[in-house]
Image (cartoon, rainbow, N blue to C red; front, side, top):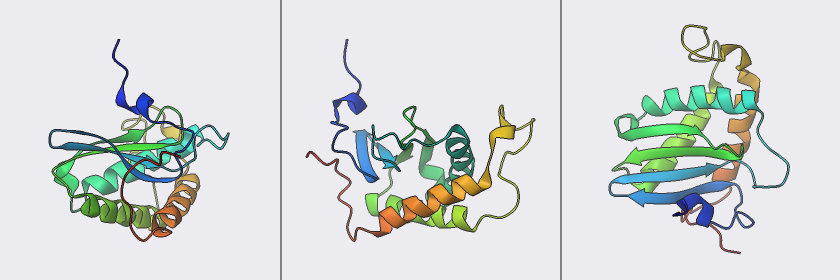
Length: 153
């Protein structure tokens, strides 16, 4: 059986950052890694869930909104995948940082915070998503130039 691409990356060397997981034609899958894998520091379900609601809404209302195919959490609770069509890497990074700033500044209800809109709306916690966005934005700002390549050692 063919292995999926994400299993081909040596997770021992991945750190927090933004990486290109794969490119399929005109669709780029970005790995938005908010945690170092296998270190015990995993996102809680409510953090992932709330961050997903906010990020997905803001990114679909951004300059690249029409190019967004998907945004969602990794099952391993160490980050998210963002799939976009025909977007430049720098444009995507700029948008990700803009979205994180919007999450940090978000007040009021979390988007989709009702029984009608969400299958587990009671698990949404704005404070945990804001904290996640603050930490991740700090990581992205800490490097002047991202090459979007996974570390190999």
